[in-house]
Amino acid sequence: MNDIILETRGLTKHYGGVHALEDANFTLRRGEHVAIMGDNGAGKSTFVRQITGVEQPTRGEIHFDGNKVEFKGPIEAREAGIEAVFQTLALADHLDVPDNLFLGREKTKWNWLGPFRRLDYAAMHADTLAALEKTGVKIPSIRNTIQFMSGGQRQCVAIARTATFHSKLTIMDEPTAALGVQETAQVENIVRALKEQGEPLILISHNMRQVMDLCDRIVVFRRGRICANLRAADVSGEEVVAYITGAKTQAEYMVEDAL
Image (cartoon, rainbow, N blue to C red; front, side, top):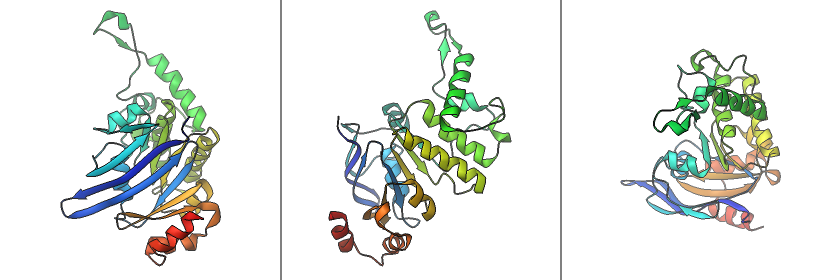
């Protein structure tokens, strides 16, 4: 089996005259956790939008799970096995936890009746409990609607949704940016659980301590380009900041990466 789960080759995105992403060559191996860092506007979110099918690249290639892919939308990416947790969470406030986990992928029964079928609430309820147990998420009642949950609980529901469908790749975009200390710790425990289960992950974060604790590699974006590809165990936070700010140059990155 190919060890590489995701690879981009020359991935580029232009918005008219704005070059938001330029020649991004990126590789993620199975079971690997990689952080993407950079200032606002560095190209991080643009890169993720191309991978998840939210937008189509201007040029370049995306290879996922051994195949070249051209996702026309997020649903195609999700069906291929890419689950993303964005800052907006994309949760339906008026629905409970099982309804949110299975939104758009509802389980049904009596399928032999053709177009007349019924939602299988018992199966979705059981699978929701299994997903919460797998990720270590603790919610008093899964029948509570999302609107009455804390920010941390909402974030954990969004993350548990990825575990429900056994994704091949999980992408988290600033999952703890608006959370408190205890809620952040809960989300980080979920990330560690995914690591123990051998599931690859891309984490977009500005939290240096979090990145150093949770990730194997750090890929730094600057002005739409990848400017560093670093082993987290081999660098300090100060060195990573130097790449983010431009104090260390692309030439230095190329030498360091080749070691």
